Length: 618
Image (cartoon, rainbow, N blue to C red; front, side, top):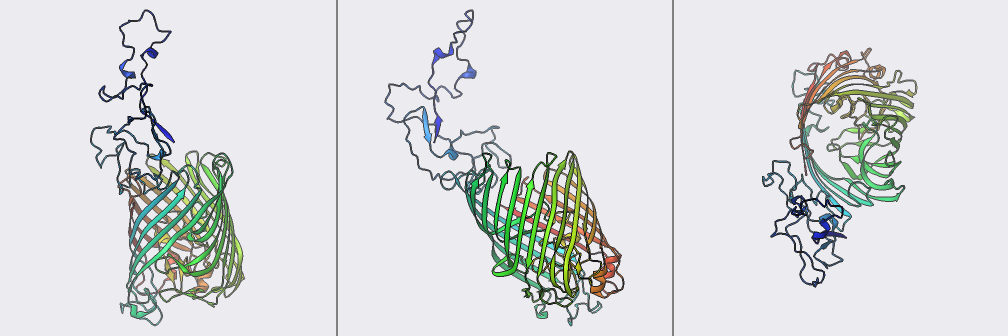
């Protein structure tokens, strides 16, 4: 219950202090203007006489309302007004504030203005639909989000044609066709997040979330057999998909300290990234998660078990009706301000059990097991242990990761025999901020397999990687899926040359060449709205013996090439409600890349790619 003060009874005698200088001017105003009621005399509230009957009409302050769009209150008053001194307001979130026009402009839309009375469709000021005001009672909020994200991308990729299918251009080789392709993706998302608690500073007591996503995707290629195994489909395909991507219920199990530390549980399809940069696991899938904080939120921890659903081939959205037959257990622990203020570290463990299965994707291509070598269904059990960090030490920004993976591949298709897994990776990024620019340099190492015939798989691969590293969002090597005769040399939004058939539907493969990546880059905030991102990456295979066996070539050199990219991000409203991003990248091919596609008529030496991505969010 809140009591809004309406009037203070005046007591002129109280303005005379017993210690007042007796020599002061007796005509001096005992109540100077700075202490007077700011309202005009005609607008001032009358003084209250205690002898007056207070059960009649009471004085209130008209014309006051909460800021933004608060909607109607669902809180019924428990008390009635009994005096003109105070007005009881039961709903503490909807206390009225006086109308306020600081600059006398009438609250123009284009100005960042104080005291704005919002509307239902106003996404910038306080709004009931954004969870700024409770929708039920005083502790239950609804956060509604509508988001439309579109991607327009053109690229050149070495594109093998399907066996026994002619290419469009008779002048090109049968095994490699025109590299040009174009794709369009659009995801329209409506999210409802209902939670009970204190809005921001405290973990919700309970929470229910539902994301509905409608996807449209269109692919055009110059070669038959890319859009589908059915040549009758032609060189393009258009698909739509509708899915519930995130859906979960969450409950706080207990408070563990007076500093709002807690333990909560979440059940359902949920987004999760297991480390700072997404090196090992970053996905939205079905699972059970236990998480919480310690030491006044200085420490955070997660234990989560995922039972993966199959992904749609073209939209990468979850298919609730189809089980992936893959389970992943993840446990991690974060510590903030480790040794240095602002420097954060994490330790994590991942266990991935991928059962033997067969799967043909929706375009007719076999994705499990990989259609190479012996191509027999096989089970992969892998276990990752690692440390990661992200933050700053004084003026230097530092981000690092190191992981070791071990386990057993029941029957690797490239090696043609069972494999004991033993591989590792390391990554380090250093950057320095100077005014409006950030200068970066980074290095990444993935171990490779020097002998695919010895029963020991030493090429590093991740479960569902989505690394934010070395400008991967804009780079050619990081964005594109480069196919190599039945598998992908690299998966989309991944850096490791894992030789697996797709990141989501394929199985992890630890018989691969590995990678050295050296990067220099710069981020420049040209204006508060516009950012420029430039990266140059030098790429080498760590080991090439796997590629030589796979392609039956006598010698493949290590240097992949130089990846050069330039990207921009533009936020016209200084926030994420409207984001425009675009980029251009090219791979200046090295000897190793050319060796993979050598002596093929119609091949390209320096493939290029460009994209435009738009995001509109309410």
